[in-house]
Image (tube, rainbow, N blue to C red):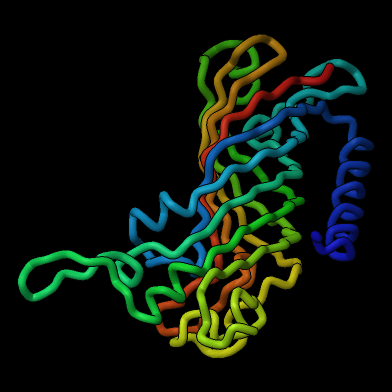
Amino acid sequence: MLNLKHLALAMCLFVFVQSANAQLGFSHEIGAIAGPLQFRADYGVRENSTTNFGNSGFGIGIIHYLNFTYSADCNCYTTDTYFNDHFKLRNEISYNKTNLKHYGKWVGNRVNPDGSVVPRNTIEANQLRGHTGVTKNLDVGTQLEFFPLSIRSFQAFAYPLAPFISLGVHYTSFSPEVQTTYDNPNPLAFGDVTDPSNFYSGWEPGSVDASPGGTWSIVSSIGVRYKLTKLSDLMLDMRWQYYFSDWVDGLNHQLDSNKYNDWLVWVNVGYIYYLD
């Protein structure tokens, strides 16, 4: 299950921000996003293309924008300032899921001195090969988006594309899953995710923990909007999200090769509608 206590707190903060925004009288936009992602976890080998593409998942979300260029109270433009014409506040609730598996040379083939290629059949390779997991993350957060071009001009069809960059903070309620099919010599321990001997023997005990939890993260993205109609846009967005925890995937093996917390890259397509 997701961490309900932490999620409830984050939702309360989100509702508070939304209520405060509504009182300001600025106009609003709503939309939906969806797309594939790569979850960079402790599974597999870092900077390995097979690992990165193999540990890919999918995300969906609902987004809300506070548009400072237009006032809903008077159906008129706001004061023409640089901030109002180049920034939007983006609020979001999103969910992503990724199936994780170990890839790379430690579970791949081995080349013999005679040049023949055979699958690795060591205890360590079999332990890694049998270890799989799932990340399930529910996000709530806010980002400030900067548009180099005029937002007013874009809304007036002066140009069809409006690029942007953003930076923000999200709270993530994570609930990972861990499985293993490694056949431990001890029959009582077969497939037991609480028994460290079923996992890679080079890891310290306690390196695998699928307990749910919560963490904050930094979110940055670069993207572009396409003006579809007067009241709607299409959006293409590439996100980088870095978590303040290394337990989002349920694995923290703490070897020298484990230099970073969990993070992801998410490319999503969105549809945005302007509310009158």
